[in-house]
Image (cartoon, rainbow over all chains, first blue to last red; front, side, top):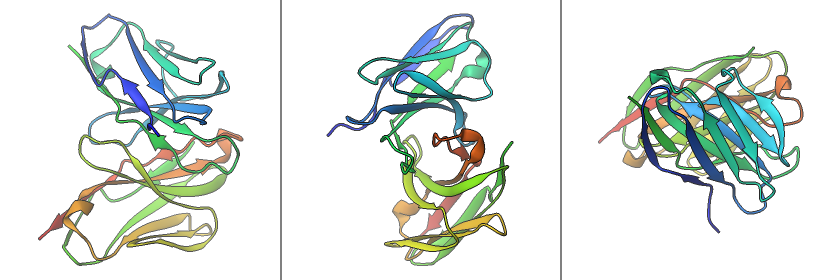
Length: 114
Length: 113
């Protein structure tokens, strides 16, 4: 079975531009979460979606948005990019149920804003 | 809000035992997880403790004391491949029914031959 897949793997954008990152969860997993990881720090929570509904939102500006599709894949959108948005963006999926305690992460999208 | 504290770096030699500590502050605690991340890689789930005590999985063990808001990851028979960053993460009440872990800043483990 395929793991969590993210695309693209690397991306270079200019300040002020918009970016869309994509994630496909493990088959059967209905929950997708997005994290931002700046070099040398732990992943910071951005969004969680479950069954196409937003279940949680981290402390990120409105420039960040996301959605989940009927096939449980997800997109993270960032508008008006800033230099500080340069980071590794991680997508994680988890199976349904309150007992789901471990996330499976994708390899991430490395975003560089210049 | 939540806060987690873990050492920034730990060094050890191959074959040794190392303990990575994590202390946390959170409004409503459900459990503590540990993840491993190699340079350039994705975080990989290692273990989860919801109750006090020790959970053992092969060479890795994780411990939790809810009364002390403290946990640790114990790595035995260290191998070079264990060199990586290790993150503790809390699952707390603020996340509601969804599991939304909050991660610490990570501990860089360097294993020397």
